[in-house]
Image (cartoon, rainbow, N blue to C red; front, side, top):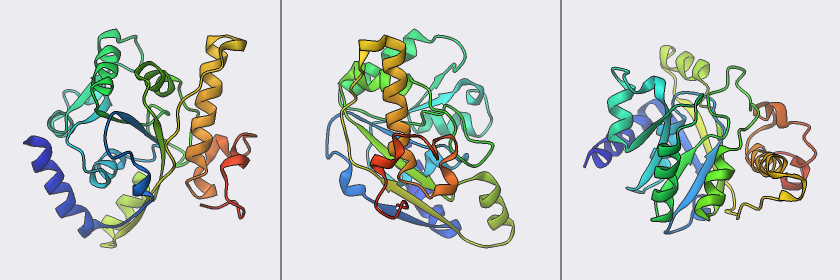
Length: 225
């Protein structure tokens, strides 16, 4: 019930503050567990993805620092979020996420782990590909543009609507090559995922992946999504 109410509020208020362009939603699996992995520009990213995806079984891993926040704490709980300590091993949370995905739930997560202070992509962490590989579910890369905190604030105070774009890529299965060792395999799979995400956003958002050798294979002919 809480998810239904909060989704209704989000869908009521968002169009007033922003024009949201949704591209490629047909790429989302119709059922079963999978991962949506996106870049992380600002605080609105999770809400934007929640706006775009009409599912009642979304898993939202959230930094533990928001657990007792007066606003974000209750909202994240209402959305079915799971608070995770990013700096210490949290085995129980990891097991819970994998269990939910195996049971058909959808994980929405940003491999970067925290929103970008530079308004461009940061280095991804291997947790996402680990989750997907352990649960044996596909990953759907998604690129967000226009959700950076600075731009959103400027537009709100200037009584202008922001233009937010959500571009969803093709689902794929994570393959971890362990021939060079487990850590190297996880890193290679993570770089591959991040380049798939980078190919879905304008060049100014690609950050550390702008010149990554894996990126070219996922870009369209003109280099822009």
